[in-house]
Length: 171
Ligand SMILES: [Zn+2]
Picture 1 (cartoon, rainbow, N blue to C red):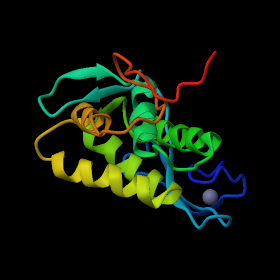
Picture 2: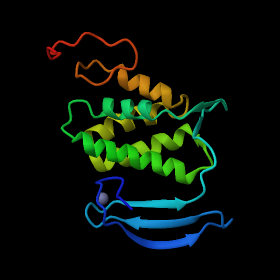
Picture 3: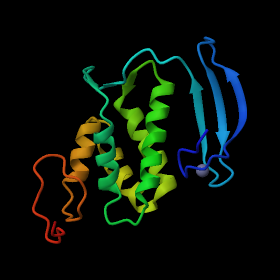
Picture 4: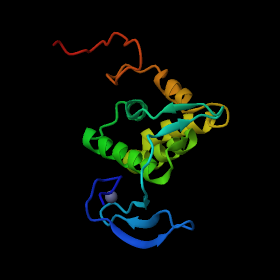
């Protein structure tokens, strides 16, 4: 299985056993390339992923929204887009395999922090500082909004109305 942090294909299974209910297989893995450790669950996927907010409301999981929040945290950091893509893929895979389809918003935030930690220190601190300040009171959408509200002018994808970019390339 490809490493969710560096994309390395050489990850090794250190431990493998059924979960208590025997509904899935849990595997602890380690990546010899980057030292990343992660757990995979082999489980039947029966449902679409739904994000469960603190008030109990469900919304369909939005991969693009997740990508936007990560890109905002990575603003002005030189991280290859392919590595970001791999990290997002890893997060989505974990969400798919670790849940029955219902994802608490906190779980997404935790996975993003894990991923950013391995990807870029500054982006990790940016995301974590916002996430930790708001995790008690707000859901993931609020965190994304907070990150996007930072006064930066980099060409990160805008969530809604895009602002004028000073250095927008002529097309
Ligand atoms: Zn790795």
